[in-house]
Length: 582
Ligand code: ADP
Image (tube, rainbow, N blue to C red; front, side, top):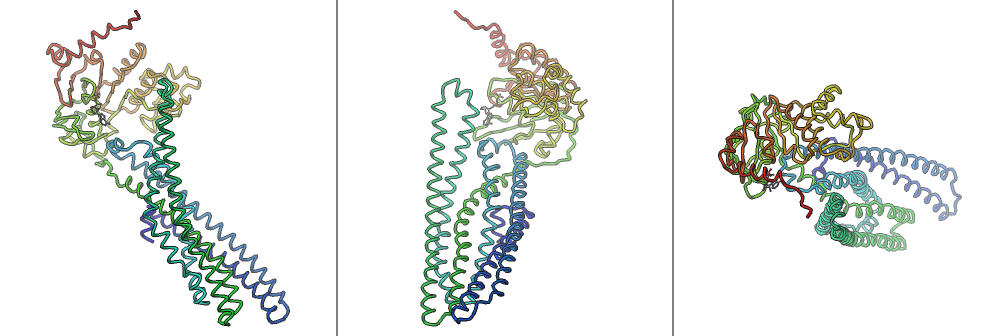
């Protein structure tokens, strides 16, 4: 039983509720047996007078009828109780599991998400939780209750007539051996089926996400072929899985049903020889029909349970992934940032090599360098989205590895190039910066981020719902909303990642003005491709292949004639670029 608790991966409350659901299911099974007892009693009342040529006792028959009505009512209430206990429990537990997984995911390092793709996580959160939900509601309580019912009734029957009971259950061990013995095989094909299912959701997601590219480049044939192949594979795996499971279950059932024939044969033999009276014989015939129903149900439910164990094992693996922890109450004394001999690799190869760097508090530091030199990686490491492999990063003298990542986030605001917006009102999208901010505070932040004008021009102003991921807004507008969030958060460290890289001139002017205001008296790290926009920074750090190539003020670096000045000259030349139509 405790193994089951572990396998089902239930919370202590969920386990308590599960036991109540099993108990309720046993009660409803037993109440159903009661109606069978009434039927047997009625048969006795009808058959006995025939054998002894005495009149039928109609009064007793009426009592039997009343007993039948009572048993039916009892079954109704027992089943109602079972339904409530089972389903309420199952859905409450699966909700708890989903929230728990979401919470756990939130605390995992980004390195985990680098290894997993989104569809696998969606499968974990939706598919596997649905499997648990289904098992908790439709499989496990029924299975446990049926096992208990079978054990209780078999003891009762053995007490009544052990020879007939033996006939009834004689094929059970062999039948059980078939179903239980094939568990490994069922799990193997079950796992293949789960993987095929995940592959389909990955392909569907890729197809839908890339639909624009698919249309633009005429890839519909190629891409839908990949989706088609995944669907075909899932169909194949489903058929194989059902065939394997079905074969063993059917064999088990067939062997089990031999027991009915055996009971009838031995019963007739005993009856003819005078070793068994008619009434117990009839009783066994009626009971055998009933006792086989829970037994057959056990045989069909067991494979479902085996299949569920694949999901719970996957969920368990996910829950065991190590989260990023740290002190939640650290108070950073100042916001100067220091990187000491930092080394970092996403996979095997180091992308940051023994990098040392100091970013003074309340200053603007620009990270520049060729694409792939490690600018974004450095900013991610400072924010502890990832943990360094070697060396240390200190903020206000504290190693970030010792600070709880969520707490660390309260010290930082981000303005990324790819702004994530939610399908909600504009005001709520800005409020993401600081939950609980008043409407006035949000409006002030929006004004400082030069958002006010375009938001008021929207159909419902600040209450306008922007489409999924802000698809109704332009790139510049999205960016300004992101800056408004940073104003609202009012964190002492600000990271700007390629913030003005893909904007038109008007948006760029507005955004530059907003940013100039945002960076005042804060520790600011700007990742920029366009070097002229960061010439006024307090410090420019030039990265190359994960190392600091040079650092200093803009003018100094220009006159040094190193990588920075070469990149600067190349960019100045490209300013004169235009499309040549001839
Ligand atoms: P930059 O911001 O200077 O363009 P990045 O910090 O994004 O450079 O990338 C540095 C190196 O790390 C590149 O070689 C890039 O391919 C690699 N890289 C970046 N992000 C990941 C990731 N999530 N997983 C694996 N490699 C990555």
